[in-house]
Length: 371
Image 1 (cartoon, rainbow, N blue to C red):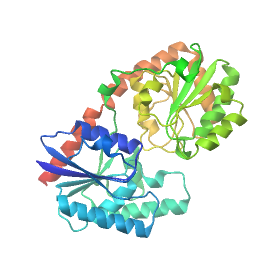
Image 2 (cartoon, rainbow, N blue to C red):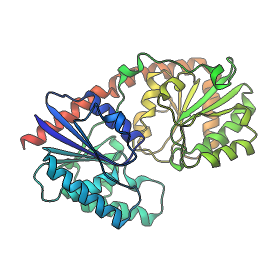
Image 3 (cartoon, rainbow, N blue to C red):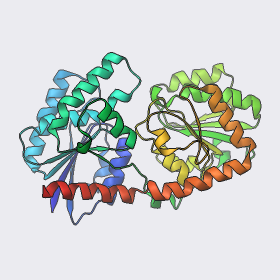
Image 4 (tube, rainbow, N blue to C red):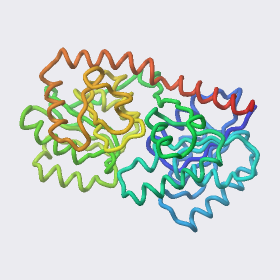
């Protein structure tokens, strides 16, 4: 039996990915050890990994904190002597690859979205790119969660194309077979309302401000429309003020963090993802499997998943009018809405089943171990 040590700092989508991967891994072939940041909850992973080790890891670069984390992780690697070290997210990827220097094993890195693709200054993009170039030789293989992620890494010269394996992200479709939809009445929304919703952290990346500004125009055109934002984040207070300034507080719901976003998605009439940058956009697969018409932006990897007019409608990044027009078009054209949904259901089941992710990941491990 081979031992896999997973090292992770980021939560959110990365945590969900890791939870699903560990839940579906072959326990007869692999023994899983989890090394995670202080942001993780032991209760969520205690039955999925044989051992859970906590290391203080922070997203921001801090030389003293990072050196402490590298030392701790290196000691943990030496303690368990894993056959494979699998590092998730940029920060854990940096800490893990440096900590693993000179130790004999297979090392795999998955950025789950390159830092240099974020909306930031050119100086920061250069710094992030340089770090990835320097660390790329320190791992055996890199996993990209979308074709866009591979293309952008190759274009920036992070490594040669053959070092990167694309394993498209996915969802555990079985988990969505027994959905308990949230009742509209429990959200304070009338039964006959037309609900436009979004799932994602209230951060700059997910453009919650664009969602609110588009909502203002949508409400003027569709008077019975209501809006639901599922998630929390560092911009929540700013977004709540914007909602009030737009005089939308009577038709807006912000749920905060929820354990079961799919139950909320089920009450949407239209689901949106208005990201400014996106390595994959896992929630798109959740929208698809629940049969919701999608409006999304042409950001990074999203056009690899959504084809405009076939399985969703698209708008440019930060295009308030484009989002408004797409929502109204789906509202007014029921045949279009039905066609988009039907195309998405087959797409989700064929491309985004997490069973495929597990199989392809374990196949990569087997091939790497044989080399």
